[in-house]
Length: 68
Image (cartoon, rainbow, N blue to C red; front, side):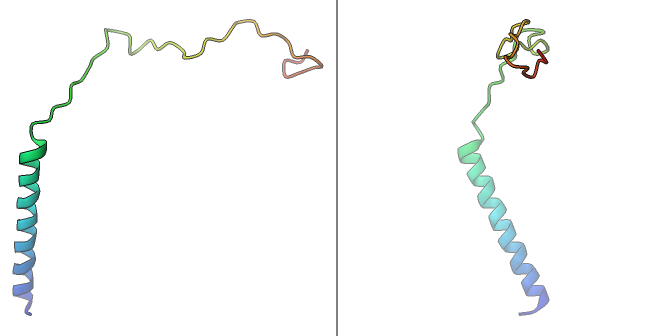
C-alpha cells in the first residue's frame, strides 16, 4: 500500500464517519431544546443560607472550644 492510497483511504473513512455522525445528529438530536428558567431579578445575588444558625451558642461544659 502506498502513501497516497493510505491517505486517500483514511480521508474516505473520516468523511464517512462525519456523514454518519451528522445524520445521527440530524435525525435524533436536532429538535431537542433546553428551556432556561431565569429566577426573579436579584434573587440570584441574595442567596439564603440552607441552615440558619442562632446568634447565641450555648457554652460548652468544662472549657469547650468557646473558652468557657
